[in-house]
Length: 253
Ligand SMILES: NC(=O)c1ccc[n+]([C@@H]2O[C@H](COP(=O)([O-])OP(=O)(O)OC[C@H]3O[C@@H](n4cnc5c(N)ncnc54)[C@H](OP(=O)(O)O)[C@@H]3O)[C@@H](O)[C@H]2O)c1
Image (cartoon, protein in one colour):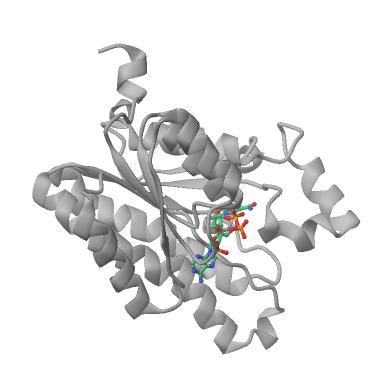
């Protein structure tokens, strides 16, 4: 098989949570470009440029609206997708951030963050993973974070959830690696998306963070999307349970 063949996702179907915006849009674009059809689970419709990109590539882009905070709605969305598609790749991308000092962290904010960032990862991996296990083939890629390894400031719930995502990735891989389903995670570094509006608007924090990135720039949705394609593809066939930092060198510093 050629190198292109080993990295191709032609004929595959991928589900991407939050796949219409931010890093998720980069993931969706990269999967479509690699030949996959993509189903986006999110609250808002994917933007017109993503729909056009799919059409130009001759791929299918479907949208299933769901609020991931609602566990019953998550099950219903999974049922809807599975009723019409065999899913080969699941990307648990959607995530939320809430910033409060730990001493005052509101418990309802804690619940929202843990629900979307961690509970949904298990729930959707169960729902889409069971048919993968039955077929003995599939790939799950979770969105971890540098805060899977570090504690951050004023982001206790997010750090706890992303630490959980890294551990859940390894726990699932231990159980599923011998059954043909690969589970891995990507840990993006600092990326200029809506999630980081507060950091981008704070010139002091922005300068502190930017100066520490060896690559000398913040990351992009494309940086993350290409690595997700690799982890989803046959080229990563012997990669299990990894949390791969895509961080411009931040973790090595
Ligand atoms: N940006 C970074 O620097 C960075 C770094 C490390 C890790 N990450 C992780 O990468 C992932 C993507 O982050 P991002 O920066 O692209 O964030 P973003 O721009 O804020 O996008 C978040 C995505 O999640 C979806 N989402 C959020 N809450 C949802 C809900 N209740 N129901 C359904 N969908 C929901 C949103 O879609 P809708 O609004 O349409 O629902 C959106 O597509 C997250 O897991 C994040 O933790 C980001």
